[in-house]
Length: 320
Image 1: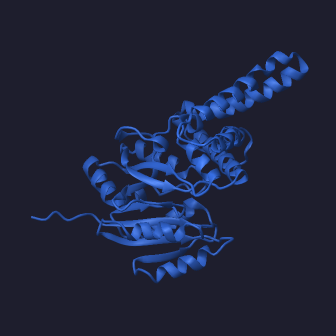
Image 2: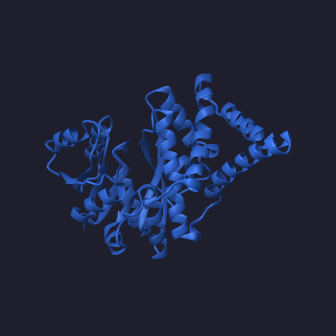
Image 3: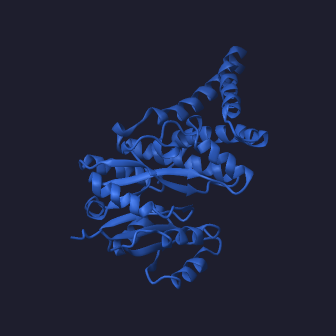
């Protein structure tokens, strides 16, 4: 007797993704899993040709549908896409990434086998030019991102959060979907509610997704500042969710500011803290093997950008 396979719907927030959207959608169309009922693109206002590309993609496959996301915010986009989805499982894919051909098949096998509320894997940062490639190295380093399994991998099993996610649709809707008051970290916050509902967040290292990071220092600093400020919002809402890796960047910012003030007002010996931090940055850059000296030099700017802007966002960023 043939066991029927569950149906899935792919939901994707789309904004300012002209360079990557077509690759991302084609990676969905190339999936080996045959029961994809819909690919819903929630299209927000963009400063490039994203909207035209999305409309052109709609003519490629009848399963591709577009919904408007006038606010342009990720949580709103995902909820709007989920509202029109009909699949038993919701597969989140972002417009700046590509999923391998077996991604959905492996994810559905895992979520059915484990009974998890959400299954996800590894955000494999990749790049087309030296700066992006250096950011990818930083995002795969414990010195860059702490002990987040979805950045560098690990054994299969329960975890606190994963990259992207494949959700039980009934559970997703019963929990109210993503919190639309959160511009960032809405996935982490939803995973907290899933765990509170006695369902598991399951990490599967087979689910490796190519992600294209920011291509310049300004974009990277803005991204990590937002990560930090919205992480504070999530922690204030759920204090028990805090992790050591989330405390370190704001403590580092406060330590550096204090040491600089004290060094000029009391004694230059207080400069030992920023000197130690700079030393660890250069040591981390040198410890990364298989890369060029040029990328190591770029990393010397990327590491502190990620750390300090995340910390400053956490401490000083305003959220509405």
